[in-house]
Length: 229
Picture 1 (cartoon, rainbow, N blue to C red):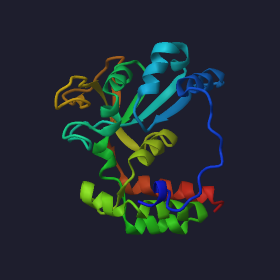
Picture 2: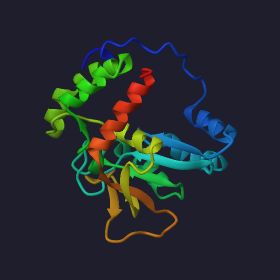
Picture 3: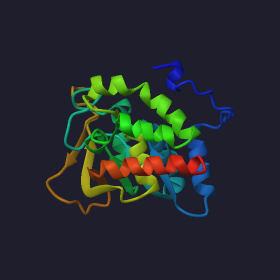
């Protein structure tokens, strides 16, 4: 997939923050004048630590959008589990059963949302930033077709970030969610109770519907805006 999957892009010149991630997050939350929206697109270890070590800071999360899990289909790292949840199942269980206002963006809605050749071409035409994004995405086309059987690149993380920026992109239903933290074949599976809409304080807004075309349009428009168009 090219050098570190960057499509030829130069490494960022930004310096590495020396603080532990959970400390940096706590300080950001406590210093913000208002509630903060957090988009979590990896394992949930640091958010679980935040809940345990800095609960007052965690309470300042106004909305947590998680890319992870799967409500009604299998996983992508095992037959049952999606990678981000599987990587730290205990952390995911702690976060998804907390009272944080959470949206879960799982494989049910990310896998149908793909950038095909036409969509990538539109990225490329959006400007220099879009062209760089397109170069990176093209490296993943063959992998997506082989791994998922899709016609284009699955934009897992970008869809969650889109929902964080533009609430309502996804149709959600409040559900009770727990994570299998056992050591068997089901470890890391998100068990979503789809029988009823939940009124429990620990319920999660589970994404169950997506307008894939609208989501892609939003991504293209944001890239065009970054390029000053």
